[in-house]
Length: 140
Image (cartoon, helix red, strand yellow):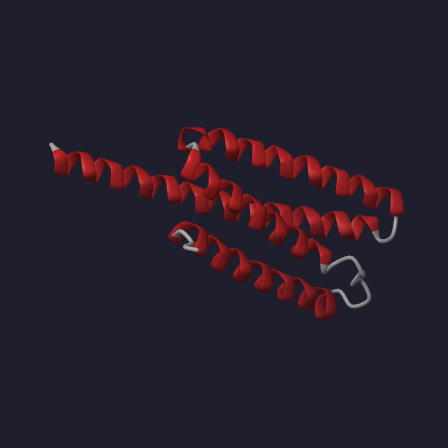
């Protein structure tokens, strides 16, 4: 089974981001905010990592089968992530265990991963466009 370079790069980078963000966040809770570490913290980076795996798998399948629908899929994935996140946040409010800290941590992770994913897919599209233009120049 072959894996595309884009998928491999994304998997490598999101794994690295998840590990760094997870350990950095745990370190901040341990050293800067002692006593505020909550039991649900490890689930936040795991949630974003797993969603990233699902997302890149969907993009890879879309790229192979229906590349013209890539933008639609990108927007659908962002909406799906937001809706799933809202459901998780509503659950957190219902449970009420360290809800404010969980919400703040979750929102920070959401923004970090949103920035990363936007950057990754933006550079993917720019590179793809440059390759297409170079190919057109060569053929002309």
